[in-house]
Image 1 (cartoon, rainbow, N blue to C red):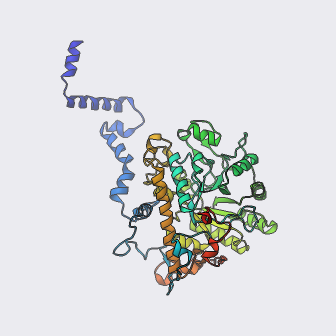
Image 2: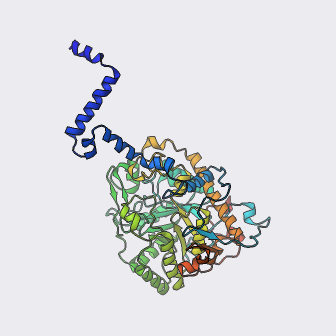
Image 3: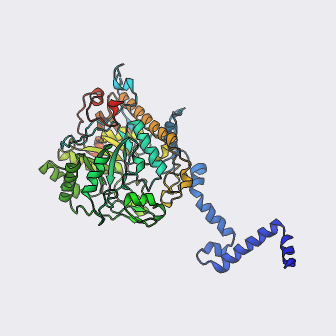
Length: 521
């Protein structure tokens, strides 16, 4: 025994390295059967798998140019980061965009911009930019709501996001005067920091779930009564990442706290069905909306990605005939978002936002319904110029998800579905969450929103308007080929936006239904 120990103790460090490599080679050739490359090229084959695992990071930081990456390129991410940190987000020496490329957008500025008087709300607060419409006003809901910000946090649930991330977002919207959509994971303790909340639920009915897995109206009424900061309710029909497919929360992310909030089992994958139990057709959905609005007094809307229009046409006809229906419609883009999805869905199912929204708005305008509904856009619209285009097409508010995540530290690692998010945002790992300081990150979310609104106001004034709701479709041009073939939005998407009733920013500021306790501050 001593002889063996003496022999082992005399082996140099490089000898141990060779022994280790030999054991790996034996394992690669004789024991493992799953990796052909490792079998045929023992030891060296592992280098290939390691390089593949860090390939996205290598391309992101060293290979791709500033405008090349998807879903958000380096320039877009840099603008959000700088805006959130209140750093210089300007560019020097002119744009590096190819402004002649297909689908490049131009905003037609006025000869003389809109003049802001010294007593104007935007002279006092350069970031004041509320929604021009009141949600629930047409249907005479008991508690109508005017969002105090045109940019808000989109549906991202506690469970998909970490506790500290949700806490940061909720505290941030309170500072910025925006609202926070809960996502379909239910109302968590981290949504209760005083900011406006839109309660969102899907086919799993988390937070308002009956014992049989269906919808509980009693739980909904109690939730609203106990939490007066809930200002509206949103029913998810589908989402851009995977329309027609239920949500998935991996079991690795299901903690005891999440299980208690959602009413599910710890550590077990949560699969939401693609269909609702509470209704099975459009007339039943309208009745369901009205029942919730009557029971809670709150405006009720729907969220969906857009594809076929037959059932939307049926909804419009019912709204015309009965005077009932959703108070707002959130249109999600088929580009996908924070929700994990099979590539076949994210790449191909449902229309991109600009096409989907254009088709739906055109239908509602043709029916004479566009003034009744508040339209909310959701799909990479968290940049002032893109928002101007969205307002020109008929949007009244926008929701942002990934842009909000980036403002609190997301690095676009694209591992949201693995529970290994390195920034601690899309994970339930306590260790990874430790890097998030909600006090700091909430300020960054708020600052991103403030910078966004300030720049959107400035673009609006440059076009000669006071509020972005006044944008017309012919204020925006899209490259088709050269400038002689470029088209205004109305000619591109073949409809004209319905003018939004608007008197002045001061009227919006004085509105009784203005959210975020703006007039009480």
